[in-house]
Image 1 (tube, helix red, strand yellow):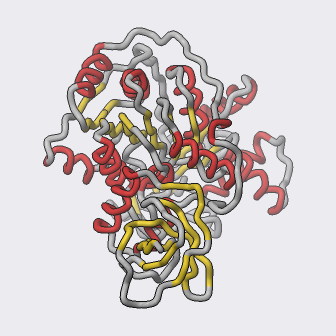
Image 2 (cartoon, rainbow, N blue to C red):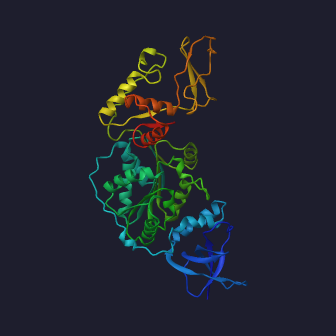
Image 3 (cartoon, helix red, strand yellow):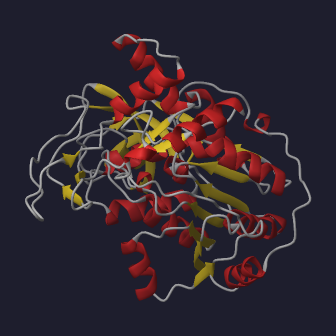
Length: 436
C-alpha cells in the first residue's frame, strides 16, 4: 500500500495537502481523481509518505497525465508567494477534460515555413547582443523598431540548441498575427494556446508540452505559463505593459512575475518586450539593475507621417456640421472610396466648452458625457471674463456614430435596434471608437 499527499484542485481546501492510499505505485506529479467531501475531484500527487495514524481513503483513478518536475517547482513557488488555498493554485496546472481520452500528442505538429529576413538595424544588433549576454533583459523599443524580430532571432538560436521557447501575448486578438510572424521566422513546430481552443485541443497541447522532447515554440496568453514544459530556454513577455497579464479572478496573480520565476526554474533567458513599460515594472527593473535594451530607430526606415490641426473655434471649417470638420468628412469619404477603414478617437476624459469671445477652452472634468446627454451645455458665462456665447462642440460617442451613419448612409434614419447592430459591427471591423 502506498500513501500519498495530494493537492486537490477544488475550492475551500485550505493551504494544506490531503493524504490518500493507493494499491499501485504512483509517481510524484501524477494527476489523480480522489474523493473529497461528497464529490470527486482532481489533484496532483505531491509527496510519498509513511502510513499515517488516521484512516485514509483510496484514490479513485490514476490518469496518465504527469505534471513535470519544473512545473511542480513553479507550483510550490506560487503556493508560497500568493496567499490562496492550494486548491485554487493547483487548478491552474490541471488541463480540462483530464479524465477523457484524447489523441496522441504527436498529432499536434503545425506546418511551418521560413522566409528570408531583412538585415538587422544597428539598434536591433545592439539589443540582440545585450540579450545574448544577460539572463533577464527589458527590450524597450519604440513602435516599429522591430522588437519582435530581435527576440525571434534570439529564439532561433535557443531552438537550435534543442530548447523550447514560450512567447506570452496579452490577449487572444494578438495571437493570430504573432503566429504568422513566428511561423515565417522560426522553422520549428509552433503550438498556439488560447481560451478559444476546445478543451480537447487544450488538453492535447498540454500533453504535447509534457511529452515534448524536441524544440518547439509555444504561443499563448498567461494561462500557457502552466503547461508542463520540459526544457525551456527562453520566455518572452510580448507587450509586457498590458494589464491583461494581471489575473483579476481568483487566484489573482501577475503573469510577469510568474513568467520570471518560470524562466528561473528552467534556467532560461527572460525578455520583457514593450514600447511603453509599466512605471512600477520599470522602477523595479532599474532597482534590480536589469539591463535595458533601448531601441529608437524605426526598422522599416523613416515613416512619413502627416497630420492636420483643426481649430474648433473656426466656424468656417464646420460648414456641413458643427461637430465634424469638413476636412475630416472629406478624409473619411476618400478612405471609404479607396476601400479603407477609418478610426476616430474620441477623448471622453474631460468635457470642455469654448468661449467664442476669449477663444479659450474651459475644461470641466466632473461632467459626464454619455449617451443620455448628446450635447453638453453647462456654462452661460465664461469664467475668464464673464463673456456670453460659450460654444459646446463636444458630443457623446453614440451621437457621433449616429451622425457618421446619417451622413454616409445618405440621410437614412435608423432604429435603435439597427443602430446597435451597426455600432457593434463598426467597433469591430470599421469605424472604431476608442477612449484613451
